[in-house]
Length: 224
Length: 224
Image (cartoon, rainbow over all chains, first blue to last red; front, side, top):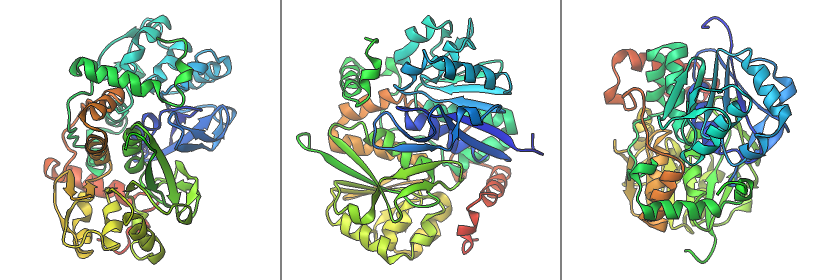
């Protein structure tokens, strides 16, 4: 592992949530011998769910035929892909070559839709547990869920925690802690409302309001 | 503030640290009426310090003549800009129009080089305190430092904490907490080595080794 390139493939797509991809990227891109590749069904600029930012996917799915680590981020843009057989077939094909297959937030919906999480414990954004269950996984409320080579993280910012655990597995605890020190990950949130059971009714109502105002909220049409 | 667009301008440049920009982006882009603009001295794709990822700057500095909030991220790419008078003049001009001028990580070096932090307390990545001091600010080890309209955050991931505080100032605590809930920011790092005084000698040595291996480490040549 230390002697050769470690190919880390991050799937991008229209209406991805930026931090789902970039949080883990900031960790895994610093691993010794990391070679991070961004691939998309439609290469080029991928506009994130809030539309202001775009991340570049240099490669098409056809360009990428294997990975040591696959990371699938989430975002409203996962919903159209749950029924996209080309994307699901690619995920299955890459997974057949990986040492670890991972997701952040609603990225786990795509792993589940590809059939990789059948009967396994997994997590996702807390608003998407039912959807994850309908795709064959067993949703759990833990922040990072490990099931053999499958590691799923909860919503958005949980990808940083997941990636540090992945760094530990791949390169050991000294490297993982050195990366934590480098990105000064000593979180001090000014509030304690980052989980559904920690936030009151007013916060939940405001969250639904802000969520409905997203320029890509129409992608959730089928969900309540 | 709620009736009109709130222009949030994020500076991008070659060798920016992705999470410095994207952590706060994921918070402030969800504020009511937010209009986030990414601007760069050289518009187009900005390759981040680890080179695998690129973020798109749709606008040039000349395109952006005012902002309600200015956010300057850090990264090794700040070092060449500390002596770039065009960029510093632009920062001063935008700052003259802002309600809040903010930075993450070594982005504060640019605010200081522009003369905005003279004599003020400010923070930066913990490896850059001396450099920040040499530019006229008073480095402090707090994670988020507020001095009137200037808000500086510590290294990389600290931008998320800073942005939630900024969200509170701009839109109130209910909105800030709703955004925290939406991005499920309930951090559970697997280690506690995210600050220099929390990491032992072995971790510090490994961090220096990984840092020196960065493809853009040459930008730090003048620093020890």
